[in-house]
Image 1 (cartoon, rainbow, N blue to C red):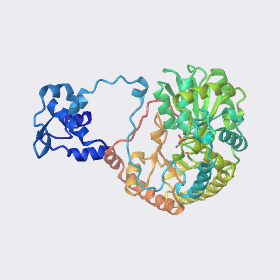
Image 2: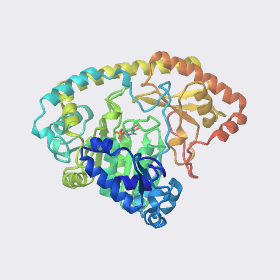
Image 3: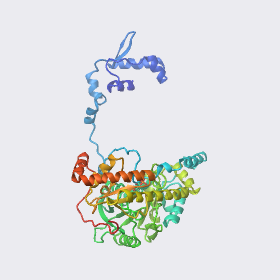
Image 4: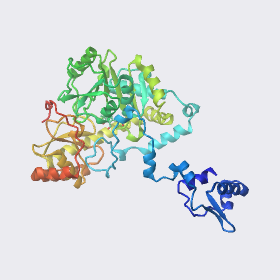
Length: 500
Ligand SMILES: Cc1ncc(COP(=O)(O)O)c(C=O)c1O
């Protein structure tokens, strides 16, 4: 009775339409035909339906006004329903979060940034390891685990970080999280109250800044020079946190020098701030010696260290880690248990097997060679097709680089002109809160092969020439299509020491 009434009131069963035969409904719902007939009778008595002898039961042509008033919302159109929706009393946290713009990534092409070579991921091997883990799964894998993560994986990550990244930690300090995004969220929850100041690199990683903003933090953009993020002034009202990418500054690609690291840690000590180190793609270093993590230099427990498997394996895995000082382990574990429990245990178990069986190390070594070749291909293609149009620095590490545009070439114009030629570039200004001293683009070189990088450079060269020739005209046309998400503020910004 309720279901049919609802169907009629919502308009899904229209006035005058015939209800299904009682025999059919009885069969579909596994009830006696008499039950359905009794329901029809109840609806007839209430005035929703009328019975026509020998021809079935029909929805009444006119529903009683009274019923409509009482049950009104269900009958309403979308608009009326929206009008009747009560005002939502949402949190300030949710109000501070910008609705993500929905867009579909075009087909993979040069110079997709922030993405590894997913087509080269050994999915068959991953499937084998997964199959084995699932077949051997015990009750431990199927019951809920501890919020800090699957203990064997925490151990494997601690070993890996100690050996490869110079991180000083015990397995107990490692929390397995759903990527860096969750790590930054946990750190924000642990440290920030609305109004607290957070120092961020400018330009920097928007994904992290969004979380700080959602927590109501006051964002203090700090410029980046050739040594990495400049150490904030001690006179500044003491911030609670500084977020940095020392191994490979996002998006400029600068490696923070040893002196700067030491100064930053000293500043943190004096100002009472904590430092969140995002070591997002440090596995891929092509020039010079590996640069150990900032966390390894920290003797006072001021550094929180976050890393991710998104770049080194694949982003859909949604697994990463957060290393916290020993005294904060319980607090972070408790917070994690309240807000999200733990990452899926079987996925953690698969990743653990993948690491301890040596596949992880082999995959990283193989990909490092492939990315090194692609990086070379990019540099050569830039030399061939983009000379005088862009300047690309040394590309020491990572999966992408910054390319500075020659004087007079507008970033926004280039993005549109390049897109017309099936080339993808991200303007550096998208990552900047204040105007940059010079226009530039982020060029990814890892996701596509050498041939595509060559095509991309050739087409980008043509796009740059077009924009340069058309001067302001092309830029105006592009602005009419849709401005980019520029959040530049007035402020001082000195150009990086290194590079252009
Ligand atoms: C600076 C930076 N940190 C971290 C990540 C990885 O984030 P997640 O682990 O949430 O995928 C990215 C991905 O693009 C990044 O660019």
